[in-house]
Image (tube, rainbow over all chains, first blue to last red):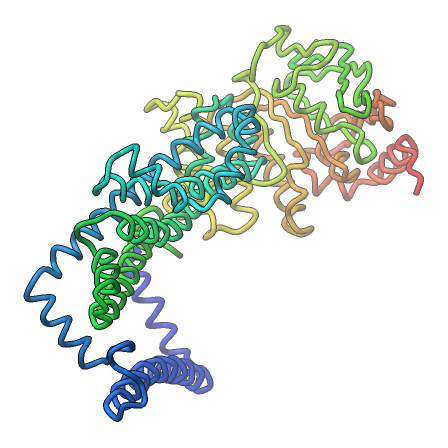
Length: 281
Length: 256
């Protein structure tokens, strides 16, 4: 029924569209296309320039690498163990990310539940938040051992505090009138949380997921710099040590793609979630 | 004599703050009969809303007590429904899900009560919108949905805390009429807090005028209109209306 109505509505709209509106829509589309076109040309232009300048020797391809050499390295790598390195980094990032989100949200819930606990922990959280977590690297390695676990803990350390602060802030700033409405039905704290506070903060949760996916990747790469036998961070450090800039550049580009894909995954998840929760008007 | 639905006995409310004590309400004493509509007006900041929160049980009074059908309640009484200024509909829930929120929280979600909700939705013209979301409804309809959410738990007494002040003027007049007729039809008792004098006269049988802080009952004005099928809009057309307005205005003693 609603589907039918929607079709009818759009049909009616189509009939009533004025010439100006069609022109307006056309301009909008053209503008969008132009922006994408320029973005692509910038990438192509820079790549071609880089390649050409390296060919004529204006820039030294030994320390700057070169697009064609990057492609070669990539081909070589994909025949060898690119899959393994990619998998290790993704696995560590996702585990660190999920742990950070879960533990961070859980801590935020506990702190929301007990305002006194939240007040007590405030200065500690602020200090921990401003502390560069990478400084904890050696400590983490000694405590949990050199290996994957140390890298995951590093990712967790970087994303955890931010998640706690952001989620707690969202919980605390939930509309008090809405909470009062629930209280007029004699809602207990549990009901207020599950029915009002948490659903009001789905947006906050997704925002913190978006921030966290990036932070977890930072933690994993930093961890891999310190201690690893595989992963993109390992490739970058190894490439730097043996002066294989082709390998370093290739890994960095792959890393950029990985980061973008992971971020997009969260964006898609958010879209799917809001769609199922509420089919928009 | 009619049964007393609500009795306020010597209610006093003190607030503690680091820079001293504030007495918001002192010796407030009045009662509301069953089926009666009573309004509370007073200068802004005089503690009208605090008084309503005390009646509802959300706040405990420092002294004095509130009796609901002759009984003192320890927490939010199920006999009381509370309507706030905003409709506070939850955007992520459909209208139906919004309307049954109170039943859900009070753990009263039975087949019988769901049927009652459906009946309310049908009677008050929201049944076709039950699967829509709050953002798809007009302000008046949203307020009606909020009222049905309150009525769903079958309260006997309704507390309205500036329930219409978030609406624009025209919608507000219409919604006032709407809510009045619904409440009368469902045989509810109502205690209404408002800063709008015409609204208080048109909606209620009695108007309680509070003084400035610490607020006490300054006077109680009985409003009589000799009309059949009384409605807020009809009251506004009556000659007595402006007399009551002037009387309440004088009692309020407003100085700028």
